Length: 241
Ligand code: GLP
Image (cartoon, rainbow, N blue to C red; front, side, top):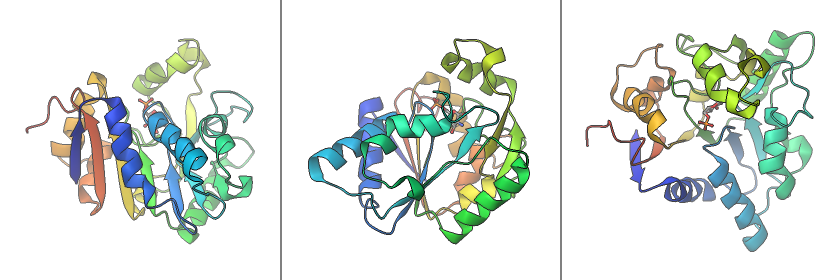
């Protein structure tokens, strides 16, 4: 696990883009994440597309997760998030983008089909953030390391953290999600994770230096042979450096 410490969020986003840039070529499969952490990276991808003409026509994307029950037109659905912050501003064909569906009768069946699709289109580079409780995608503490894409209940710290997107009302935050599993994420050939701000410091320490255990889902990344963790000074403040 390579850890890069930057001065601030802007510099962290520059490093994320540098890691991503060589993958922005025809034939690559990108694994994408939501949350506020990757916004700087997506802004840089849009800029690069506009200024340098980098094309996404032959690139495919797979997102990590989606809330259960939110219509895709809801501004806080991860489908809408990805379109607003990235897909609408680059030349990627809609059919090349994939966000798991949180709607429908057979969510578990759909989740399995999504996992299969990723198996058939192996992810070259996966973008990750981290929750303050150490979750990755929506794999909450206690999720088995061998899990694949599945439906999950969100835990209170995550509902609380995400209430800021739902008028600070925990009741408006969906309590379930569909998420790539930990084993699914670990299949990506390369992983780049961004964490900034003091409220990520404990999770970052547990991920980088803690015991590899299901209580801290992100700790499994220590076992992946191609991970770059990009953190700012505040998120890195508990690390032994
Ligand atoms: C959500 C997402 C995660 C993300 C996390 C942190 O729970 N499912 O993929 O990493 O939030 O979000 P933020 O980057 O806004 O702190």
